[in-house]
Structures are given as C-alpha cells and as structure tokens.
Amino acid sequence: LNGGLADFLAAARSLLKHSGRFAVIFPVERLVELLTGRREERLEPKRLRMVHSRRGDSASLVLVEGRKNGRGGLNVETPLYVYEGERRSYSPEMHKIRGTTTLGSNGSG
Image 1: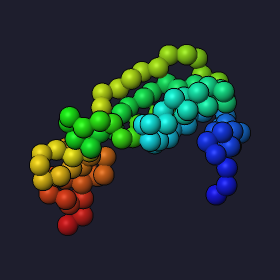
Image 2: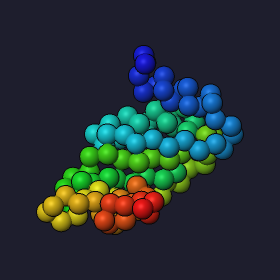
Image 3: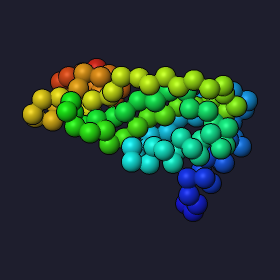
C-alpha cells in the first residue's frame, strides 16, 4: 500500500454513505494527527477508547469511531485492558472480544 494517513482517510470518506461509521485502531502517539485528519475529511470522531496492556500501563493504542458528516460530540469510553495479573492472561473483556472463555476455548469442543 502507498500513501499516508490523509490518503487513507480520504479513501474511507469516499466509500462511506452519509452518516456512515468508520472505526480505526491507531497508535496512541498519533492520536492528534488522526483526530485532526478525520475532521478535515468530515469523519467526525464520536467514540474514543484507550487500549492499555494492563492496569497501570500507559495506553499504547486507541480505538476511534466516527461518522461521515457527523455532528460534534465525542464520548470517551472506559479504558480497555488487554491483560490482567502477572501471568499476562487475557482480561475477561478481551476473552469476550475474542469469543473465548477464560480457559481459552471458544465453546466448539
């Protein structure tokens, strides 16, 4: 793939219908660039959630959802913690997202 963030956002905007949703997982250190670019492409940020490896760690990723031609108003949601405990086992929420139980099975046997 060629192009930068601006090209990616412009392509996303051209593919979306009016009020269409657009979600992205992005490195947190580039959050300002992402939010600025989304606004320039009229992909208004609506939901934002920081992703942390575990409680106490700094966020490494951010989840952002926006709407094409959306009105202002951003909802900052509670953080997502990927791991819990010292053994680096997935948090209950990550198991839910992945569709697995805390034992690592997806219920298929």
